[in-house]
Every structure is written in C-alpha cells, then in structure tokens.
Length: 444
Image (tube, rainbow, N blue to C red):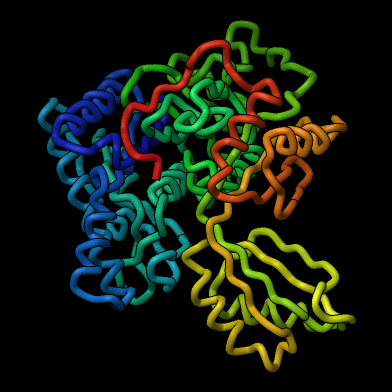
C-alpha cells in the first residue's frame, strides 16, 4: 500500500462539477489500495477575486488581515471537496493549515514553512480516512494565520509528503504534465516524461509556472518524488525525481519512472546521453533597474545590495559594466520581480547620496527567456545557436545570465513570445503534432 499525496489547483476545482470529478479520482485512488492525502487550492480565480474585493475597501490593507482573508478560499475548497468525497461513500475529513500542523515564520503574505507536525493528518490516515488539507496557508508562533505566497499550495503538498514519507506527491494541474515550453505559446511543445530536480528547479526559477519554486526546493531537499499531471484526463504526466518510482506505483506513474524491474529485481538500463536542452522557460513578471555612475571602488556594491535586501527584493540577474556617463564609475543593472520594484526604487532613490551613484533608471516591459538542460555541460555551441536564432528573428538581447545547466537572456516583452517559438524550433524541440492540451485555467 502506497501513500499518495495529491494536490489540486484552482482550475481543477473551479466549480461543483469539477469538485465531483476530482472527488471521483480521489476515491478511485483510495479504492485502488492506496492511502490518500489531498491538498487543495482555492476554487478558480477566488484568490484574485478576494484581492480585488480588498482593493475596493482599502489601498493599504494590513498584511495580517490580507492573510486572514486570502486563506478563506482554500477553506471553502477543502470543505466542499470533503463533502463530495463523503457523498461517494468514503470518509474524508478536512483540515486547515493550522490543523494540519503547517508551522511558518512571521512573514505575512510570503511565509516560509519552518516545521511540520501533521499529527491529525497521520491519525486520519491510520484510521483509514482521506485527509483533505487547505493549501497555501499555515500558522505562525503568534497563532496568526499566514499564507505562503502565490502557488504556495504546491509547497504545502510537498511539505506534507516529506513529513509523512509519502511514496509520491501528485501535482494536478490543467495540462498533462511538464512540456518543453508553455503550450499556450508553443502549440507543438513536447511533453517531458521524466526529468530531474535540478532541471525542474531551473525551469521553475525562470518562469515555468507548472510548479512553485519552493515546492521543488522542498522536494529535492527531502527526496520527495513528484508526478505532474492533469486532473482533466487520465494520461500519465511527468515524473520528477533523481531515482525510480516505487514498484507499487506501477500504473500510477509514467513507465519511464519505473526503472526498477520488479521481476528481475535489477535496475533497468538508462540512456547514457542526456538531451542537450530539456526545455525552455519564459518570464514576463520582472522589471529592470539600472544604477548609473556607481563609484568603482571596494564596498560600493556591497552597500547597494544591503539597501536592496532591506527593501525585501529578490534579485535575479546582475550585470555590471563600465559607465558610459562618468569616468572611474560603473553602471549596475539588476532584474527583480515587478512586485518588488517600487519599494526597491524608492529605497535606492533615498540612498543615492550615500551610495554615490548618479541616478536610478527603472524599466518595465521586459521578458526573460531561459534554455535549460543538463546536456549543456558537455555540448559546445548552445550559446552560438541561441544568439544566432534571436539575431535572425530580429530580436535584440538586453542582458545575459548563465548557470551550469541554464542560459537566460532578457529581451523586450513584446518580442518574448516570438523569441520563445523561434528558439524552441531552432533546438528541435517541436513535436511532429500537437501534444499539449490546455484543459482549463488562464496560466496566471
């Protein structure tokens, strides 16, 4: 008997009919002989609707009260889903994040999980019940409700799977798995049957919305196998792990995940050569900030990044070059989430005198394209092909950033979709026919 944690996103439980469909899947998994724990997001666009409602009341809501408000969406979902499962003859019990033992720090709106004590959930499983947990939320040391940030239900699910030692954490969404690019932009994107934590981390960190970044970090740290699939079809999705699936999951995971052969009790052979490029991610949620005329002397950069850190910004790309306006100085450019930009610009403007730089230039409407693949380590020519492809398409590159298995470029936002399609084709990632179906949701 395997322990399966299932997470259902908002598009999967968007209305009563969707709830009933998900309930049937949960009950089928239970009756197949598995223990089941479910994590659920708010219905459809409920979280966005609650944000809009708050904005109609106040322009500066206390973050504590925002967390109390936004956590209501998942509580509605968990109770309705428990009712739907009970209606099918299985016993389901719903739990809030606090009741499920999700303990967080005090950062309202983007809290981090500090520990998991899922005692009530474990007891429910032991008693043969199905536990249904509200995602996206926890409780801090003050006993206040906190939320984990957008996409936080993924993190709730993986944290529960880790603490309960689950055999797999299934992430149900509105597409059939992970693809080589966003199928909303590239209609001939190929489905990825299996991949590693490392590659998935790079994809999630650079714009792929299929998984929350912190969820993948949790999965890698605690060795939680992930299976990304659609709640709208019975197709097997994408297996994410650095090892094979448990044999008891045969039929529940892609065949490529079952590298262990239960009949011979031996590991099956795996391909020696990795694909050069596994996938392509894009992100249009970042802004660019340039500090012009930064004195070129020790300690200046450290001081600037201390200011940015105090503003609470998460920096992505960093480029420093010789200043075009002042001898003996540099220009320093960073990219960061759009939501962090206003506070960061304000903090930097206020520190202009002590920082010694001339001005702060804030630019929106930028897009980031990232190539990801473990094969980049040993295959030359990836950069040349990427830059050549963008050049032929008439797309200018603004910034470049690399890691061992990733190459990212910043381009104009209005050319991002064109860039994604051109690069996807150039690296032979296009499928011969359309494989991807987007069953629901908006991709936001």
